Length: 188
Image 1 (cartoon, rainbow, N blue to C red):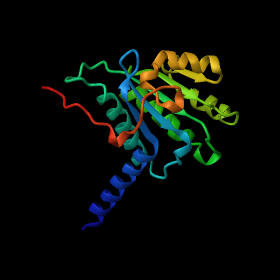
Image 2: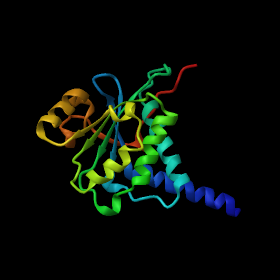
Image 3: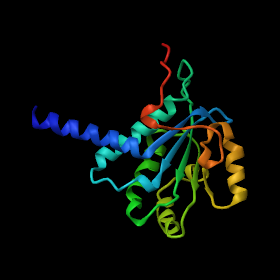
Image 4: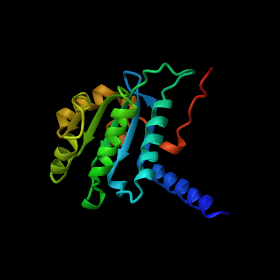
């Protein structure tokens, strides 16, 4: 095996590990028909390889959007993102990663974000969020909802629907690791 093949194999393995740790989804769609992508920030560690992290972001977004296809792609599919900040620690804080993720969404997946919910934001993350939000476009910022109390949590559950949310978020769906999400073949 050549050194290039070996480093390629290592990169693929690292991508798989990132997907297994971070990305999860539900099999169902929201009330509006959008796939729900859940990212648990407490399982994230800042990447030493930014190129690999960018590949991970593209894979996460592509697979989430593709999970909403029912036979064919329309071209205006959207997704709902949930960023779960519960139990996040300083070691998980990755401002560059947050900025990269949102900038990829804005630049390469324009208008694909229906809404993004930030759950259980700890006090120390507020300053990080303020910094990250300066890099986001107004159209993206308007789609981001910080859920910080019981009323907002009820609205969050009502907007997405219990059928599309895992039990730990007040729903009835089963949490599925992103690599286990089965995609419907696209008709041509």
